[in-house]
Image 1: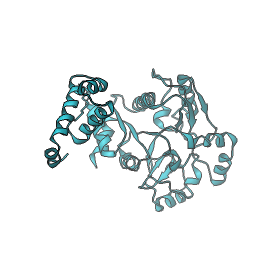
Image 2 (image 1 turned 90 degrees about the horizontal axis):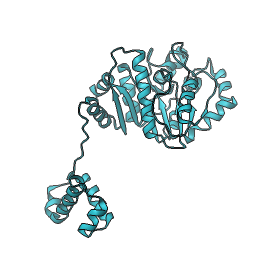
Image 3 (image 1 turned 90 degrees about the vertical axis):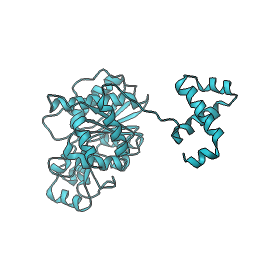
Image 4 (image 1 turned 135 degrees about the vertical axis):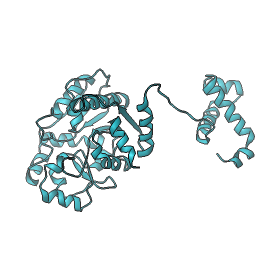
Length: 318
């Protein structure tokens, strides 16, 4: 709000401030304010919105003793996120961190999932660290397997995680048996033609919420990169791949990089995932900070769940 506007509209400004004081400080309802000031409820609501937009009212949420809340707010602003959830770094680290992040992601699901939603779950190390359902109420929904199984011996399988969540939500599930990375393009086409895979993929355009991990397009920072042939990953790099989401290589604009690498990953294109109302990225590795920033700023993800040390890494370069 400019000083010129304030000088030209002193009565409107005074009314705006008066309504805001009664609503925010005196605890009066919009209906009560409307009756007391002989205004319509619509007018009161408009004045309150205008007061926030003009800076007459500034709302701050402070959580005493929770410094992570301020870091989360900074992440939201820096990466243009709808929300950020930051947890403490556990003393034990390693598997404890992954399990804690998985539990935090489920807590976020409890906040954003609505009754009847379709929720896509990708094979990520954080979600696969979950071995039992945490005490979070989940509405009845359908959980859909987004990717094939990741080729790791130290993690549970995504179908098992979905079964845990399904029991917690008293919902239903759509799963399939396939690896995340096919041995070659012929094998990938065979997996993609399986009836259970086709049934799951048919759900992707109707997903409401997605939970996925994020990788950098580099050795040791991406499951798909590490399990592709040098020729396939080099081709993707030359085509602009800088990160991956749900195993799919993406460029700096968050678009799927097509080619041989894409035709090995049993997962939907990123363009399909971003149709979902909520896209939750669960991230933990500072080495993937650039990839995470790309996914956030391009709108591939709307929410980040991470730990304090990684949040600070994400904020270190803006």
